[in-house]
Amino acid sequence: MYSQFHIYFQQFVVSLICAYVEGG
Image (cartoon, rainbow, N blue to C red; front, side, top):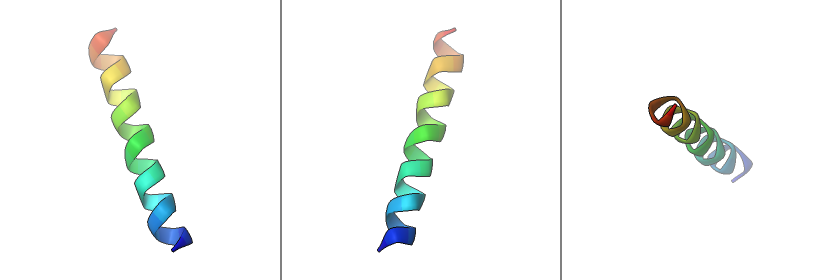
């Protein structure tokens, strides 16, 4: 379960960074 959460969190972070870069 921890692994699944870690993967989900990582995906969220990557998406957030991508959105920030696109916005910037």
